[in-house]
Amino acid sequence: MNEAKDIARKVAQVQDLLTEKFRVKQLPLPKMVARVGRRLPRGMQARAAVLSDAERLAGHPKLARQLDQRSVGQAHTELVAYLQGIDVADRRKGQILGVAGVIVFNLLIIVVAFVAWLWWRGYL
Image (cartoon, rainbow, N blue to C red; front, side):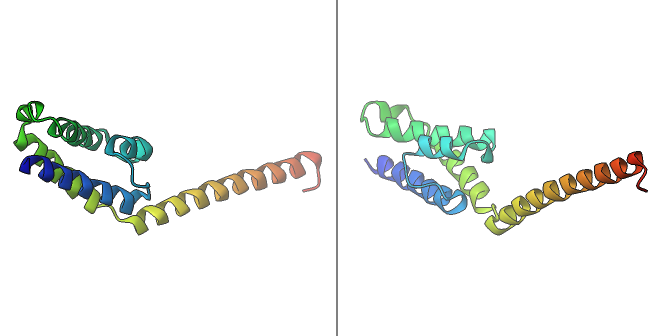
């Protein structure tokens, strides 16, 4: 029973970090990972799957004996370390700069096309 509470605590910590870093509302862990999608690397998605499977098995007394506490603990540690390393402000700044770069590139293409059209028509 103590192991089930420990696993529930680990899952709750991961859910809180997902909510904090990716602004996903509190749902069961597999749904939260699905909503985060590609923003979470495959390896971290696999570690989250280990945690959610452990949570599912921990609720059943006979199946709880099948859990490998070492792999669950390692998956939790690696997932928490990855999520704590995410800088939300830097991600947001990167997204804004990416959109600004696309806009500037498109404007540059339009200006070059307009100047080429002016030259072709003989106005320059």
